Image (cartoon, rainbow, N blue to C red; front, side, top):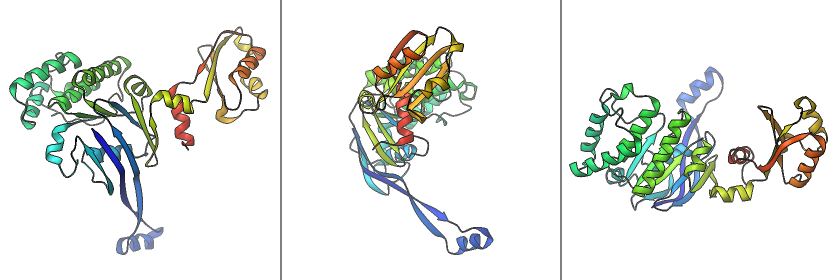
Length: 334
């Protein structure tokens, strides 16, 4: 369905010397530095998969998505989606995709939502019967009925996001690009949108590429993740494989018999661990000790904890996926 082969995007950055003279020289004889925002990224996405496309801010995620949607032209490399080139076949290609940007909307601000959908129906040349059937499905999945007659400007953020997702699906695209679809939403609305995405993927067999900073989105929706950093692909695989391969962080959680008897400083002093190899957090009277199991075994850490605390309700487990990804962002994957 989606084939990305050695995709690269370069931008020119003007180099300017300091001071007034440097500014004048920069105007008359500008010097340029070539910056590779995306550097030889390759991956494939089969039909019907939900792919999490993640990376820290400035990693190049948005630039890749803009090339996949045809907004930007690659410097080199190529991508084909459903057999079409996003740039060369743009007019035909846009009928195969839907795009939702969490910070922007494709809806007409002052029109009632129902009229907005009517305009999009004509733009995408959706026939009456298909439109009626699609709206019935979207109303059921995204629960649009409560606000479909309201002007877009009166919608809450959660309502607008559901409305935007519906707008992107009116023409039955084969691929849906979702850029931060749950950003700024409360827990209940996030859950509703995630359920809707799962149902759309299951029912319509729509291929989804999801960019997000919300780890719950990744864990609940994505079959696989591609991670990029500094323009390069650094990981491509399942969450479970990532946990197995890179999840060296473990955690021990316990509630002490007497919270005043436990000292973070004293506990750390007896261990030859420092920095991110050992962290201790306290929340609602519960302590969470995260440690690098490559530096100290889980068995030894558990024994040490039991010997140096009066612990009750103790448990041992893997650190959550957010902790694993955070460490990978910071240290990079070799």
